[in-house]
Image 1 (cartoon, rainbow, N blue to C red):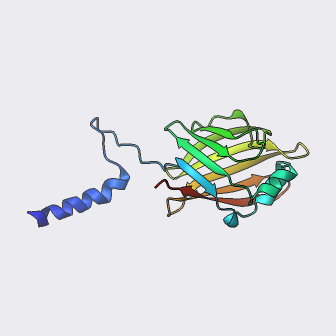
Image 2: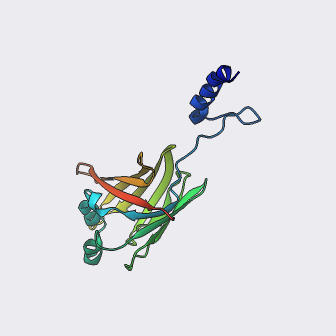
Image 3: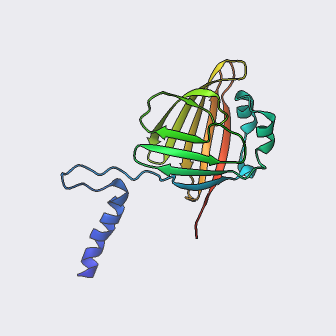
Length: 183
């Protein structure tokens, strides 16, 4: 009897990532990545961030602090939005970013306090996309797109950034964060 039930069990396990049907026959929504938690930057693994700081006209103190200051991102997530609270000992006005997943363009501000318009959506079940429309230090418009996803190690988060500036090739950067586990 046990041997006859093993193929059924194997089939159930194989279908599990696809999703099961609800009582009304409709398939359940796939599980989305949960970014909730406390995250610290792994500055040694950051790449290409200098040009992004130039575009945002980051003050000297912020440029000097990158890689030296103890920053923590506290992320809470619901079905409707991602909320990122930055705990950093710097006078940054945009320390709380609310990111509704509805892909609607909204007036916003960057962590440096610069005005922007942003929209946020799920690209797939593992990736949240943040699109920010900004102006550089001389008032020229550009777009910053950030793709937030976890690596195979669910305690490592990559944020892949692309700055699209008219007349320039796209600029790519990478931010890496590590989840703080409470023991």
